[in-house]
Image 1 (cartoon, helix red, strand yellow):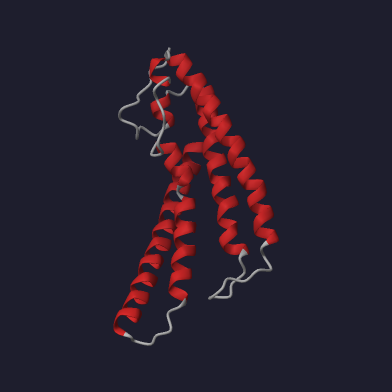
Image 2 (cartoon, rainbow, N blue to C red):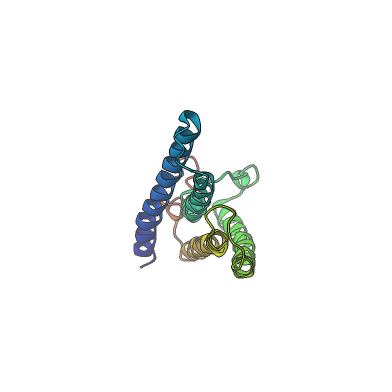
Length: 174
């Protein structure tokens, strides 16, 4: 069940992020063309749209990146641990990450709501929408952390927990 949810999240979040990155690239391209060739297209909105699209696109992918092990990790100590020690270390790290992203979730919602009356400088959209990217991202990271802990507690090997994407850290089960 969890793997099916992850598969759906992978498909949807990566596609949404790809569209957001495409929007950012196109908006930047139009803005550069306008400024370079003096087309007078009034593209002052391009920079703001690019910023908001990049923020949303990047933050949506953090959870998937965590699961796949693409974030930088310090493995100096964990490499010296037994397989059981690595599992305990993984759970401790995931609990710490859960705590931090829970705080981001709670305070991100608060920040989005508090800034909902503020309008963006150029496009005049509520700043609720750009600020909402933080708690939405935190939700997906919390999901990945909690399911990662659940997988380890079920006895799933750590390399399988990371979807086999980490070639250099296959951890055997005791």
